[in-house]
Image 1 (spheres, rainbow, N blue to C red):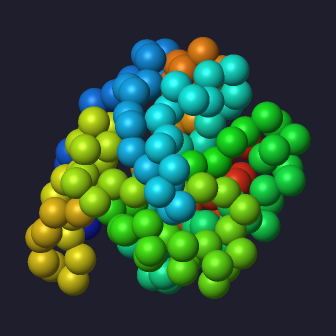
Image 2: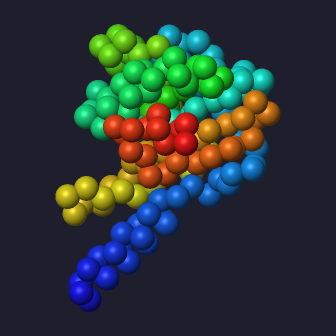
Length: 168
């Protein structure tokens, strides 16, 4: 029992450590980057619309593909609720283009090769896989209202049921 409590405490510590410093009710930080086609994109371009801004580690990996496809499969329901979807990863525009084409994604992916957006949204941090620590994008979704205010932060993303997390 002592071991399970210790492991649970470690898990909660890691989860707490992974949570962004941004808060619900605060203005989402501005960013300027490009989308998969090299077109300039900034968060303020979407004022007046609700935004799903989701950060994911890497194009065409199992969890990231599952998450993107869940959003794609529920795209109409999300649009009906007034959402625009923007995915952000450190991949290149060319990688984003392949990912969009391969999975027929109907939304834009934002290029963040310099990690400025990841760092601005405080989702770049220490992760652990198979006992190995490394730095990477901590999968996080921000729901942003029409005025640019953060409505909800999802830090425990369920890639298979992400739309359900967003709508509930």
